[in-house]
Image (tube, rainbow, N blue to C red; front, side, top):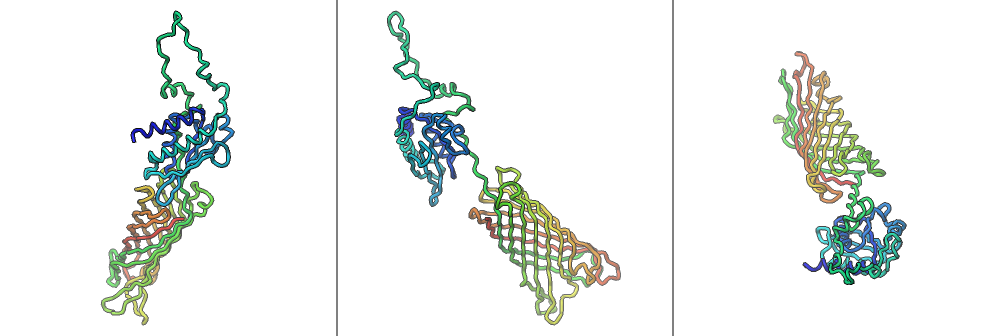
Length: 441
């Protein structure tokens, strides 16, 4: 293995120095393209006459007019593609516009490079292509006199000087004499072009299960006829969708402007009283409709900040039995109001594991039966909500998310001592978790 790379350099040297070919390497495409390009360029340009791609390409593509001006006879391009679970490099050599003069497909290692054996095969392909065509003469100002035209050193006393000729300049000395970097970069691989930014999703669909506890309790109660409500655990289904119409036609900041709609319901619940054997039909429902704006402050890092605003309706209803009996002293809840907040999503492992969360406020317009002539004629309500969780990406378009969820509504009442129900306020609290499957398109 120690002698393989000098052999590679010798193959390229014999193929290029004899014909004095000039070659340029436009940017390769595909995953790990910059790594394998740098590997090939670093080997070839140790001996070949390489010209920076910035002087021979337009829009990253070979430009034969520029190539002619720079006396470039060959372009070497590459495309990294995925075949099965492995990567493969398709290598092309062009000496004119149109079909390539030579091409070869080479398997790549897991680290995104060519093995010594496959790098040798790439050098064999290039040496064959370079040696099959003689270079046209250089421009006059670059033509060097052949060795036999170099004048011999003057003789001293009829004898040639004993000092041996100067050794050929080293690569470091060549680089010192080379033109400034802005004029040309010889033998150095170019900085890889940045990877294309991932196109924003235009549609996100979620479906999952929520598990909550619900507790309704009062403060400063002055009458004994109010009934608190405590449900240790209940489950409900949830579905949701986000739509970003501008992401279909653009990928700038406005592509993150969209709408969101969510529904969570549990129509199968039951409530019981110790004095009545028959259960009372119970249901929970939550509906959200929002405007949201996904903002990525740093383009090179997928941190997303999402302000949102919209409407929420959330109800918890204990219905009467078929004969009209109901649970006395227990009001039904039906909150309707705004939902305003800020979300955050940051990758812990880019492309694999995301941390996300949100916090919002819930100004309430109406509260249903609890603030009505039936219970408390005068009062108000205000809520807060939030979550925090992790998302694991299974596929580029598929993610599983788990989160802790909470929401709490605080109510205040204005009462008189003669009112049927007297209390200073109440709190309606929902604590639990959520697991969803998310699809992004």
